[in-house]
Length: 263
Length: 72
Image (cartoon, each protein chain N blue to C red):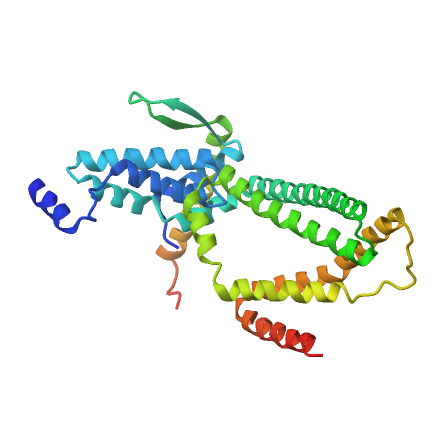
């Protein structure tokens, strides 16, 4: 019997011997990933599983059979999650609340950091001779967007690393795989549209004179740009959440862009 | 929905929340952690009450079904 398994392994190459500990760890990982079970709940269920497996192997079942029967007797992850949700309500709520508070604090931190960096960029630009509140305002706006996107991706990866610890390399591969040519073109198209729009929005009654006034006007103009573009960005994100509408949005943007570049 | 062994533990946790049983983690001989449950005084009292209620239901139904005319 053993020699049969080894020959199979040699022929198929991919066949792996059943590793009980690996299977139990996978099973435990599945349970731990559900939102409704706490770590002591998972420990309790795991010790039950171990004892069940011991009882079954004592009855002359193989490791794999014992594991499958014991896991089936305990119940599926989904049904257990439903039952535990009924008793863990308060701790689930607390966990969600703390996640929300963490998210809000992270957002505040990121926006403060972005504002500070953009003020620095605008001052640098103004001191190195760039004039005009519109140009400076766009510099402030662009630097804020850059800082916010980098902090978002950085924060996302750090959170994943802390909370989940998944395959890091696989994630980066997935991210770069998703950057197809059409998506890169779409993003650059959107950025061109935004750039053209920003330089054509007038702020009425504003004629600043010196560097200091230029900087102040630029910062005001940055906030003005946010109030124009943030709703657009939010609407686009919301539409993107409904995947079937993505094609319509793409064609809409392409049409608008053609109108822009026409005259 | 089908009952499975794992669904026992949420019930035990709920009983523990109602202070009817108590639990303790202990190490078994093999070194593995194990949770031991024990019924408390209040739990024994509530258990007796529930058993009495079931006995009342049982005797009432037995009287209804054994004696009396045809029910259809």
